[in-house]
Length: 129
Picture 1 (cartoon, one colour):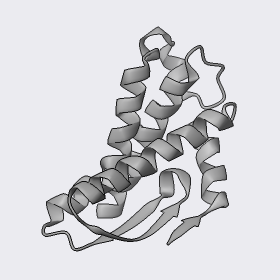
Picture 2: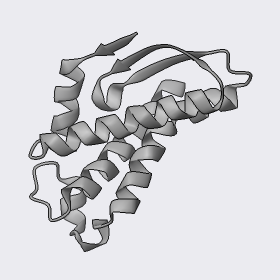
Picture 3: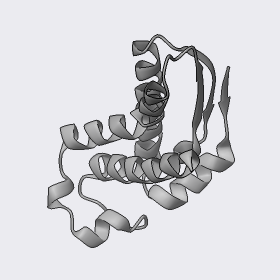
């Protein structure tokens, strides 16, 4: 079952980048695709997916160890990092533009994916504790 939470996506756009909603949707798609691909790779059974930006959650059962479950949880930020590094352009942005969600960017796809992956990683780590 897939559930879309628009309030979480709106909060994510405020955290990650409100100027580029199209790139934000692409980052969300890459994030969820990373989680689904890792869950299928580890032969887990996907019960539900809640798509709410960086606050997304995926319920996967039939995983043999906790390491696989943590890798599935961190698969989304990893996918965002891979997209960010593949597209390139982060190195040409000023450091202040990398952390400011209201800044105008020269390479928005790369920076939005980097921000999305970093914030999602922090929230995923916080959920473990």
